[in-house]
Length: 259
Image 1 (cartoon, rainbow, N blue to C red):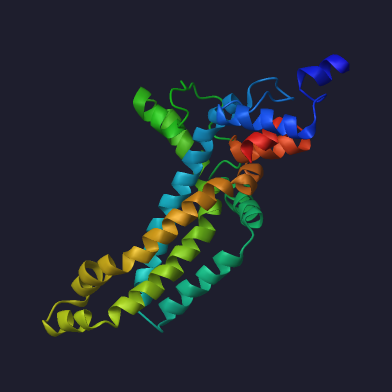
Image 2: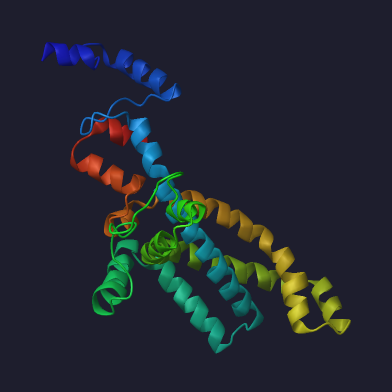
């Protein structure tokens, strides 16, 4: 027992232990995992591509759907379409991610059997890991079966993770578009005889995207940090699931390294 305490520096004062730990962190050494005896930095780097791929896919989906919904809502203000999109956005912002994930699994995975409900790729498919990004690795190696499998496994968790930022982007886009559409230069463009499509998509949208881009940047950081619930529900082998497993096993070096 004394040898173990000396090995991990537990025989030293707390402030000395903290100084040693902080110095190691600054050098990229977060210690060894108690569960696997591997370096925590290595464990995190191994799982980072998985989390980043999921977060990036969710953000792309959120940008495409959210911005289009916001633009349509602004151009059709007070219409049934506007109320429908904003109602869905309000529901999306307030919806628990884990509940949505379970519902998606039940509907598309259990009842309809259209999509897989857990994991990252079919274990029956031969796959060569290069970068850790399964879609990119499948393209590099020309593995079409692996590419299709990776995309299918990515759909449900991406939708679940994208819901909140998608709703946020839709609401911000609508608000920004309405503000721009009320400005004088838009009335001038309409007075010139330009079509409404040109006014909205060429002139108004370009000016309305500035606050939206800011929100997108903030939401992407939140996606990386908030993937814990999504990865846990869908058994996605990323950093979020690694944190949950580390907490359950009281693997304190792993928890500290991830946080």
